Length: 234
Image (tube, rainbow, N blue to C red; front, top):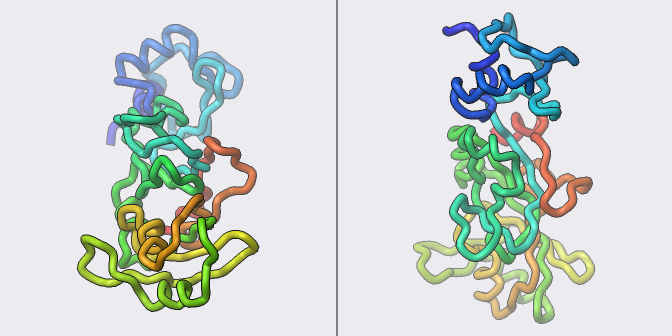
């Protein structure tokens, strides 16, 4: 394995090619422990926890596991058409590192969104075989009846699907309904409520498996997942 040099470290963190990373160093924009680093070829015996680039102290992770509080009117696409891209809310270097959304939330929905650049992690979280329940808080246009609840728990057929889908859990909390599903079909929650004669007005994802939306994150805010959260989803 090649030695971990400063230029390789910066490149792995999404700061461009090794040539571009060398340029950052030679411009005096890279520091470690308060000291300006001048040699792009300096070697590290082990990866430092953080490094300062252009005045910003950043962790040196190359594997990205991110939680975001996705706001409304933001698209989960690198090539957004009608709204702002969710990736514009993250550091540019994350895109260079190959970050992708783990599943999607449409522009009319908000709440917990996971992102990563690790394909195995994305596949495991997205796969229904993993058994991770996704919970959503919805408000409805019409009264939610017991009959509708029982129909959703039993299962409904959605247009274009080969088999019935069902709500795994349903709870009524004041004016909201908390619904848990095991799949991630296109507009699934909205289509399920429509199938029983209701209409979703607002939809917020509040958890995926054991990981809950961090209440301290404002809309558009993000943070790295903790090691415990990553392990609980893997």
